[in-house]
Length: 385
Image 1 (cartoon, rainbow, N blue to C red):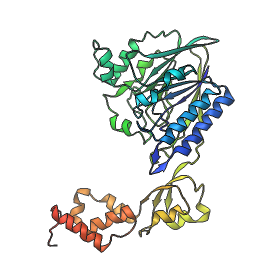
Image 2 (image 1 turned 180 degrees about the vertical axis):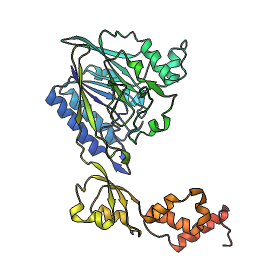
Image 3 (image 1 turned 90 degrees about the vertical axis):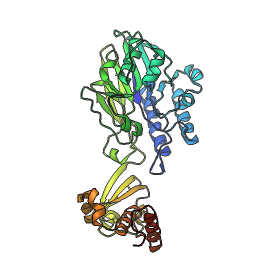
Image 4 (image 1 turned 135 degrees about the horizontal axis):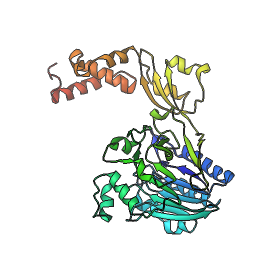
């Protein structure tokens, strides 16, 4: 049996006000073509299908097209919900989809969702565990001590009658960590970044009875504890911290028990995401301009502010997402103790610098007067000054 592991699609996501919908379609089309070309038996989607609980219409249409295209091949599809998904919305029509071997599990109902299929080596059990909180599991197992997420997931698995002699696959959308507890974050995991702690951390060893663990929740692709416990990672770069990440999808070939192969297939984006750095003149020089349609995060090293920098740069790099400055002045500021900064400079100087950093232009006299008036009212400066 051969299957693809996907996760954290975040369909409908915007990055710095740029819609990712065309980029997401480009990636999902690659998945469909791979399934056709390589006779993939199943596609596993481990949560965060959508970027928010009420996805835009374009996102729903794109996912609908993706699932329909997979159903026409045909191939089995397994989908769980993540913390960004709406359980009810994602579950809509799931009983009808099951007739097409498209299986959704969006809410834990006291029993670990299971579907079994056979190949030449015998049964393969697919278990679907959507994003769960400890409180949800306590509701169904009040007799168990469940104080954190690790205990919650162990309770679910313990009560699921899993046969370790058979081949078992599980999809899970949780924060799973290895023995060190260290996981490499991508940068765009809004909830994961905020909630990485002992309460939500789950030990990878609770999945010891599974031949492959298809994880979602963390956007950087990586193994956890052993090769077969794996985050697929988000299929696209959604944050400037991810510019150096290699985006891929695991393709798993499952033979007899104990014989499993994992291939990481690189995904080609419609637009790459990059950082570029230099003076405005350097960045716009024709010999330095490469792949200008990429999503670009710019660091300008000009010592003098560049008026209307964003519009100037976007004439060459239309998908510029952000501009920041790194020059002698910013290095000076970085070396200053922030607690002493206000003592060293006047209020107008601080406001002028902040305004220039934010808008790449100088604050007007009228705007400065308004700022002084507000500062006087709240007691930051003496209104008589």
